[in-house]
Image 1 (cartoon, helix red, strand yellow):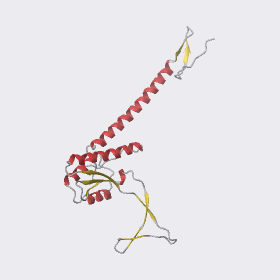
Image 2 (image 1 turned 45 degrees about the horizontal axis):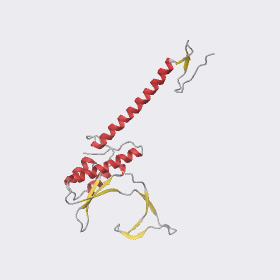
Image 3 (image 1 turned 135 degrees about the horizontal axis):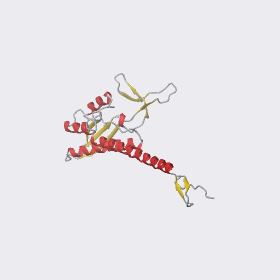
Image 4 (image 1 turned 45 degrees about the vertical axis):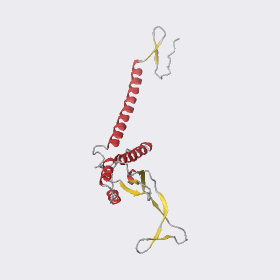
Length: 205
């Protein structure tokens, strides 16, 4: 008596006149079609991801216009007061109009600290807690903190400012500024990919 066999591939075989077995044609084609469909789906997803990463890394050619909050743009403009217009232009082109930027002197040392502030929508900073400062009538910190009726310090939620800085020498060219912007962009994209979030949109000019 000839028994029907099942190969390790999971394809059912049928007996032949010689006593050998061969896969059923319909089920073999069904298996192949399933495999090809799965490969096609993976390939399509990879192409989409690759295309989006390229868009992020190249600035998206005016594609990244959405998502920036007006308050972040206003804060960024305020932070850039007194900044070299060429540096501000580089930040606009490579990161976005809602990224803050400033240069801070190093005291007696030559060079400066170039600081980029990432808007909260693109930041990997999480909500933290801090004590609520006691303010005087002119909104200045008195050096004390607000206490509740039981004498306990009152805390508030806040998101720490996300500053990415790099020390530049006075002899560094604008290429060093571009390099730091590229690095910040790369960090943001990597974070979004790691967290399996949709890739961010940079509001570039």
